[in-house]
Image 1 (tube, rainbow, N blue to C red):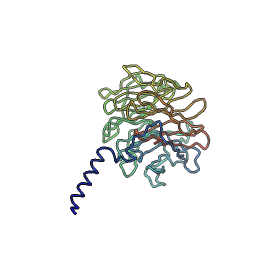
Image 2: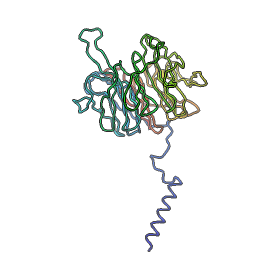
Image 3: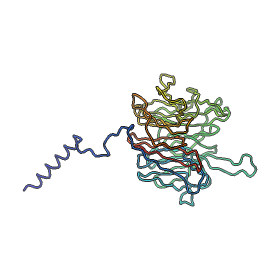
Length: 359
C-alpha cells in the first residue's frame, strides 16, 4: 500500500474541510451577545468590610484584571486566568513590591506584558483634619512583576489612557496631569482657565490610536463635565456636558461616547442620546465594545438598585437578561466581542465586588 500517497490524500481532505468551515470548533462559533449565559463571581478579601473594585481591563477572556480599594490594606487587584479570580498580592507581605496603604482607581493595558494602574498612596495626618493626605501612584506590570514607577508629585490619579505604549496620559484630582513618553512620566498643565475650577478632576482618557480625548469633572458638587481634545500637544476645550457620573468611551472608528445619565454619542459636533427608550431611573455608568455595532452599556436602576446591562447591535438597544443581584451598582465593563465582564459593587454590608461574566 502506498502509505505516503494515502497520508497526502487525508491531509488534503482535512485542509479542504477546514477551509470550508466544516471543522469549526466551539471556540470559533459566533455567539449572539444577547443570548449569553451568565455566571457570577464574588470578590471579597477575608474579614474585609469593603472590597470595592473600580476599573476593569483585559487582553483576552483568559487575562482580565480589576483594581480598586480595600480597607484591610490588601486585595487591591484581582486577576482572572480563564478559570478563577485570584488576589494579585501587591503588598510585600503578600510577596509583592508595592509598599504602603494604597488605592487603585483605574487600569489600562497596552499588551499582556505592558499594563498600567493608577491611584493614590495614603499618609496619615498627625494633626487632622483632614485625616490623611494622598499622593499620585503609578504602577506597571512588565509580564513578571507589578512595580511602582516614579512620577512627579501630585494628587490621587483617577484615569489613564492614550494612543499607545509611548504616549499615555494619567490624571486625577486638582487637575493633576502626567504624560508618559515611553521612558518617563512628566507633569503637564491644561491652562489657566480650567486650572482654576473649584475641585477639578480627570475622569477619563480615551483614544482610537489617532485622536485623544479626556473628560474633566468641574467638581464642587456640580454636574458639569468638560470634554477636552488633545491638539498639537495641548488640551483644548471641545464641549461641556451636564452629567451625573461621567466617563468616556471611544470606538475603533473614532466615535466618541459619554455616559450618565444615558449614553450619548457625539455626531457632527453635537451630543445625541443613543437610546430610543430606557427607563428614566436607569443610570448608565460605563460602556465598552469592539465597534459601534457591538457595544455594551452598564449601570443600575436608581429606584431599585438593580443592575442593568444593555447591548447595541447597530440597530437597537436590548436589555440583556442577567442574574438579578440586589442591591448592586454595575459600574465597569470590558468585552472582546465574544465574552463580556461586568463589574459591580454590592451596597449592603459587608460590601463586596461582583463580576458578571457573559459568554
